[in-house]
Structures are given as C-alpha cells and as structure tokens.
Image (cartoon, rainbow, N blue to C red; front, top):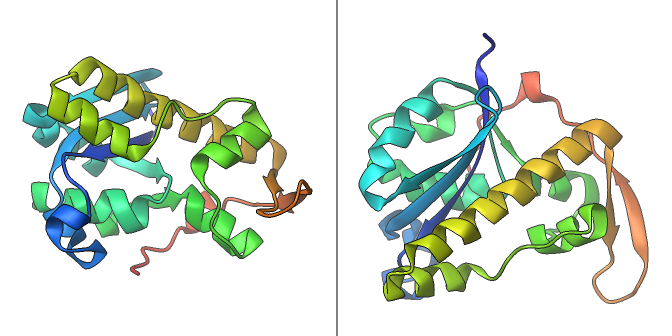
Length: 189
C-alpha cells in the first residue's frame, strides 16, 4: 500500500489575543484535530484527549495536506509531538494559491467560487463550541473544513487551476496552479 495522504485541520481552545499575539502561536491549546485518510477513505476525529494518536498518522504519511497549515496548524501542534512536524512532506494549499496568485485568499471564498460549498462558520465558532462543551458542533465544524480542503485539493489536481474572485470587484480570474507533490520543500516562515 502506498503511503497515506492526510488532509487535516485543527481547532484551538484559545485565540492569539489569549496568548500574547501571533508570535506565540506555539502557546495555543489544540482542542480538536480533524483529518481525512485517503488510504482508509474516511474522516478521522481526534478530540483533546486523543491528540497523541494523530502523531503516528502524521509520521507515516507520504503527504500532509492543509490550508494555512504551515503558518498555523503545524506550529500550533508542534508542542504535542516529539518529532519535527516541519520535516514532514507537506502541501499547504494557501501557500500554493499565494505563489500562483500573489495574494492570500480564504478557504471559504475559494470553496464557494470553485466548489459551490462553503465553510460552516468562522474559526472563533470552534472556540465558542469548545467553551460551551458542544464537542459535536466542534467536530462537525472542523470536519467540514477538512472536507472543503480535500475537495479543493482534488479540484486543483483534476483541473490544474482555481477560479479566484478579486477582492473589491465581481471579477473572477482563472489562476493556473500546479502541485508538485514529489518536490515539496520543507519551508519555514
């Protein structure tokens, strides 16, 4: 069996304001990890008490796919594992969009424009769900982001482009994006 491709997303219990700003991303507490395994063809859920179980999945992955994962998810998760997450073979779809288009574009905007689906809420909703003890809503929110990221990844692989709406006009531009999965560098920001 080929090494697995894992699409993932995390949610946190707190915000940048709670930890003294974005420079302290490693101080964020992870509340939930959602993932999709291509080899298993299923979505995986890791609540706070199960975060350690996600480590071996990451270590055995041939490719770890996320959205803004190099600048958010991976740095926030690093403290939970005793191996270097930045050394994993990674594909950050937001970075691919930035390289091809020159600007950041949100996951929800890209999903709406290319897939006709959106996110189920805002990242701060996940913190609210956690604080309210609504762990089902937290899981549903995160898994929806994983589902959207997976479909966006598959769209890019299949079509080789994304339709990106310009921020202040109604114009939508077709932006070629080629994913060179075998040549992924381990970059740091």
